[in-house]
Amino acid sequence: MALEVENAKLPYLSKCRLIKQGAEARVYRGTFLGKPTIIKERFSKRYRHPVLDEKLTHRRTTQEVRSILRCRKAGISTPVVYFVDYTSHCIFLEDLEGSITVRDHIASSQESGRDPVCLNTLAEQIGKILAKMHDEDVVHGDLTTSNMLLRQGSGDAKPELVLIDFGLSFYSALPEDKGVDLYVLEKAFLSTHPNTEELFQRLLKSYTQSSKKAAAVIKKLDEVRLRGRKRSMVG
Amino acid sequence: MQLNSTLELYPDYTVTQLLFKDVKNAAELRKNAMEGLVQGALITPSMIVDPFQILVASNKAVHLQKTGKMKTRSLFSEIIFNLSPTNNISEAFKRFGISDSDSAVYVVLVYPKEDAVDASDIVSKINGQQIPVDTISSLSDAAKIKKFYKVSPQEEGVGSLLDAVICRMAIKDVM
Ligand SMILES: Nc1ncnc2c1ncn2[C@@H]1O[C@H](COP(=O)(O)OP(=O)(O)OP(=O)(O)O)[C@@H](O)[C@H]1O
Ligand SMILES: [Mg+2]
Image 1 (cartoon, helix red, strand yellow):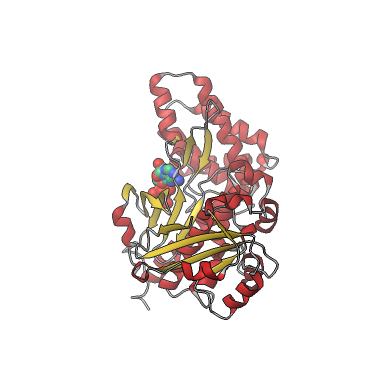
Image 2 (cartoon, helix red, strand yellow):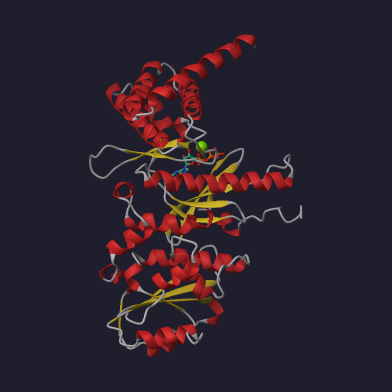
């Protein structure tokens, strides 16, 4: 049994361009049925027990595609899923060509000292999309500004915000889970982008205005922050 | 007029797509298909948005055959099953397979390259007019497709009908 879980690598990946080597996944660019495609390959972790490892990898793959579909159904932009190979744990996704991560966008805006109004609008856009996602009871699990892409619309339409990387996502209606989701983002946001406390407040304000269930979530966020602070005081 | 494509993941395979309108012998074709006399999948064009949808179903069928995970008996029935957003096999055939009253038919052939299947055999069986597959939108029934795949207006706000259809086809195994 244990031997069977050793997953075979997809030969086609050797023809694709590796764009990101992560701790749990490799991301490639290639084509699939003629379309530009992102291939996300989850690989096994040697230190994990093989059966457990296979289960975890499978769960992340399925949860990623399930949450993508749930979000799309609710009108939240995520990449189209073209194909899933559960044998090699590869997900074939629409390539959002020419998009940039929100992380890079904020960094370059700050560097060039460009119009801060744009960043404010972006923060509001993020707050709104996250409120919508949480209202669908999707908890992302890994909210960072690298897991949000901006796709330039046609003409002078404002760029579209697209959420990616749902491997750690799960379904939950609990305000606590959603509060932790926002807490993870807050930590990542403020440490990646210096002097953005105000910007992040804007994001939260927009979240609060967009979701009917926001009050309970923000209350949990406050609690989680407090817990985090206490823990760091203890050391 | 036919469309030949190679599958990146299975470069030894070719997918050939053909489309016919004004078909007079749909009942006979369906009977032939049931008896295993047709080496291809016969699909009702009204449920197809774009040739890409057929390619996604075909790629998945070859993949499941190679990995021993097909849910139906043949590669061709698997293509029809893969088009459906649900895991109900008989419903998939009812919706996506050709029916006796159809006046158009979408034909899909999938074969190893070295076999170089001759499409003229199947073309000769069809009493109808062949048209380019990229004119499929003139035969597809968007309202019926939206209803069967349960595509909401919100979802159409973030992508095309084809996007919505492809996502469901790709993910249905884990829904
Ligand atoms: N659909 C896509 N279109 C364009 N670029 C993408 C797409 N998906 C991912 N990318 C790029 O690849 C990077 C990594 O992708 P992703 O966040 O999904 O993987 P990851 O962070 O390695 O995953 P994990 O956190 O599960 O290990 C993104 O930050 C983005 O730059
Ligand atoms: Mg990521």
